[in-house]
Length: 304
Image (tube, rainbow, N blue to C red):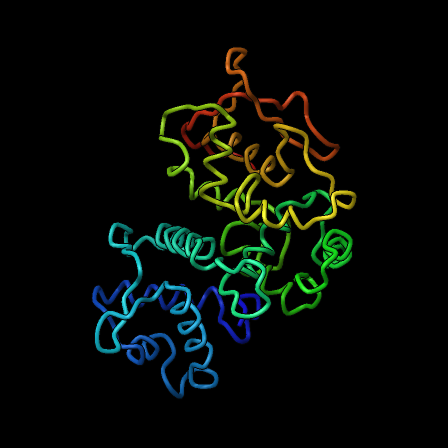
């Protein structure tokens, strides 16, 4: 089973509906009761087969937990999320699902060909986020790039439309891509939703420590455990390693966007000792070198 196979293992929108139904209930629900609330028999296509597949898959991944005689509850509470605020609820769901996908327990056998739980999706995200965001295309270059960078044919993931489409949909839902159709690589949303666990509001820290915190929270980003696992398999002639302190184009794009929004304030302090350097369209940016990060206040602005 594979999260990248949408037809067999469910869709993000159905997962959101399942979580919302369980949240509204405020108590554990029987499996059939939950499914009937979002996919009534005789009303939806194939009598709710996709709802059942989505529920089964995410039960396997530990999002839905059995709580007695065939009743289920969410693995973690969303009680503090306003039920009448759809935007906040969706953000909370995305955050919860993303942490479940990237968890140790769902990536224990990281290179497994079968029974990999979430590892196939995690591997794909880590690989995509290592690419040059200004030159990568799902439709034009993904398969060619992966073939050049990964010598082991068994671990390649971009070989067919089924897996690519699965990555596009889940990558967008989890905040690592800009559009559900694939679009551009951009982890801004995932980072924005995770900031409070990486840096305290109104406080600052060394930029290198901040990037390290991001990697611990979102291990498909630069320096993260799952990213390092993937990079260890890459042919470095096909995808050269970054210089010390240099960030990937994907992480650089997100930090620039969050700086424009006012959420992050990036500074260069002479006494900091260490620094990070952002990467742009034409390579490392000497004028975008920072040693200190502060968690600021959001402001309205355009996307980078």
